[in-house]
Amino acid sequence: MSLPDERHLEILKYLPPHPNVLVRASAVCREWRSILRDPRFLRLHRALHGEPSAAALGFFHNAASGVQRRFLHIPRLDDPSNLSLPKKYIRGWKFIDRCHGRVLLGSGGSRPGFLVWHPTTGDCHLIPPIDFYLPSQASGNRRNNAGLLCLCDDDRGGHHLACHTSPFRVAVVFCVLGYKTAYVFSSLTGQWSGEIQPMVTSSGLRPEPCAVVGNTMYQLLHDDLILACDTDEQTLATFQRPKGSHARLLRADGDVLGLAMVLGFTLHLWTRDASASWVLRNNIDMVEVLPGPRHRCLGQTLVSP
Image 1 (tube, one colour):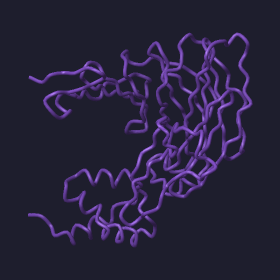
Image 2 (cartoon, rainbow, N blue to C red):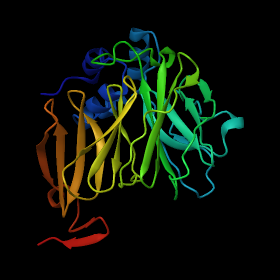
Image 3 (cartoon, helix red, strand yellow):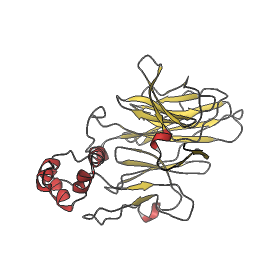
């Protein structure tokens, strides 16, 4: 027997006002999804928690098709606001990373620039350029990537309601053939660190997003390696990952480093445990997950029996 909508409203209004909670609740069933989109729920939820719900529907993109807004906002029925960058920051910025409501944007060029933006509050923090140095032997095309780290006190298990006022760090890794180094910006000091002790490896930087776990930024390298930048100790290190292509790093449950990798038509999910060993957690057959009689994966087509 199904409960009346009014009873559901009274129960669901006690959900914490955090995007991950609301999204998961909306995936339970169609009835809950309909209720969570109901303006009556939004009003009750806001009245109880004393603030707007933290969820904002939309997506970031780096498309070069002439669309200047890096965040395409899909406004709620009760919130027609347009979450967009201030006009002076519209051009030249690309999405790099996000953490607890903040977004890290970057600009290219010989001296990359960075901007930390909070879409729901509108706060923008323009980070000063890095005064970096690469030795003459570090020749070749230079690649770099960056990660955004939140330093809120409740980072382990908290709800991050006040993250827009918490200090943050930006870690930037530079990679030139045979030479890797990094710098860390702290909002507490407003300055970049000195150069983290460089290391020499033959593996180049892969053009995939980083992952941040705790206060360490992880970046995929070629040759099945991962680069770790510890922003507390300000050190660089590399270690091996499971072999395979089409890999992505992620922060897994339990605040550990995770790895998602596709082999054939199977998605493999790994985590790195406290002993620095990789543990295979799950295998997902994409043929059973993808809809329709024909399944397209990684540019190949599989015809179902």
